[in-house]
Length: 250
Image 1 (cartoon, rainbow, N blue to C red):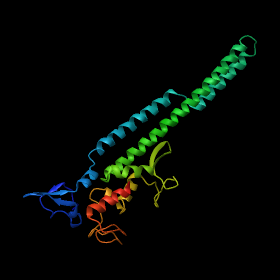
Image 2 (image 1 turned 90 degrees about the horizontal axis):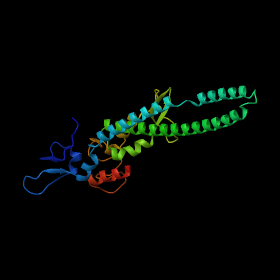
Image 3 (image 1 turned 135 degrees about the vertical axis):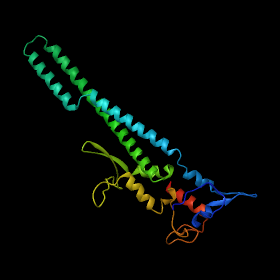
Image 4 (image 1 turned 30 degrees about the horizontal axis):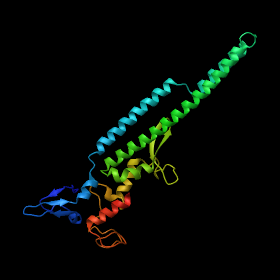
């Protein structure tokens, strides 16, 4: 049965031996055992649900804005077609001398207007696409960390660094990239998702401390390390070991 952390306990008999050093008994008769305050603060994920909902709502709103903007505007191909039709009309009008100068002026104004419109629209769409990708990547990263009962403050900056959104067959896919920025793939096929990536971190000894109910098995001594301390380091208390590990994740 998985151990559930509690801030106060009457006795430590339900606490795995490797975690008992994280509790300190208060003074006075009938005093309870209290969990290390710094650890309680770092494990608090009460605001995660609210933050995740806000991110998802923002992504939904942005997606609606993008769809509405695309309906209002024409594609560059449509604009080029319209400009070609206007040129044809101008050529027809220029067959006679009357009105040729006016058409030429109108043609120049229309071409300048179309060029400006296309430039502004392309820039706006690119900004919206970039923002949308960032929102999706953040939302998926938050969801993956929440499902794994991880610490947002510790894990989100690291996870977001490797999550990108790619467009494939008209769909937006959040994937995990490698150091070169290329999407990672499973050996059996398919992209590595943020959920897969967080699951990898949870199994990693360097990141396991950032998840609820995670830690090394046995006496708490990491493989190849010295009893009571970090691998290759000095002897530390359980609280110091966790503080040092959390600091390395920042």
